[in-house]
Image (cartoon, rainbow, N blue to C red):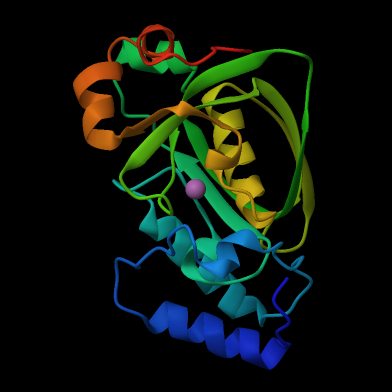
Length: 213
Ligand code: NI
C-alpha cells in the first residue's frame, strides 16, 4: 500500500471530491491501481467517507456498474457496485445479469462457492476502450462492511458475482486483464461489431482462445 497518514488521506479525498465531474478515472499503468489498498479503519471523518461513497455511486449511471477507490486515486479498500441492468432480455439471460441494488464494499473479501465458472466479456473504466473474456467463479460469498462499519455477508450469482469480484480485485491491485484470455482482447468498437451478439463461444472459435470454465 501507499504509506499515507490520515491527514494526507483527508486532503486527498477532499481534492478528489472537489475535482470537476465526471472524474477522470485512473488508467492502467498508474501505480495506485497495482497497490494493495489500505483496509479502511476510520482514516476519514464519517461525513467525508459518506460523501465519498455517495460521489462514487453518482459516477456510475451510464458509465459502469462498479467503481473502486484506487480508480479515483484513493488507496483505501472502498468500492461501490450498482447495476440497474437495463439491457435486452436475451443479453441479460446469457450473462445472468440481474438488477444489483447498491452495495457499498468496505474491506470486501469474496470466496468462490462451488466449482461453477462463468465465462464472459468484461471491461474496466481503468482500461479504457478495451474488453476481454474472463473466467470467474459463478457464485461467491461476500463479506464486507457497510459505510457505518457494520459487517454484512451476502451470496451472489452470475453478473453481480462478477462485478463484486472485479471491484474487490481492484482493491488488491489486480486488473481483469491479469486473468483474461489475452487472445480475446478486443476494442469495445470491435466487441460491438463482431462479438456482442454471438457471445464468447463464437469469438473463442474464431479468434483462437480456449473457453475454459
Ligand atoms: Ni474495473
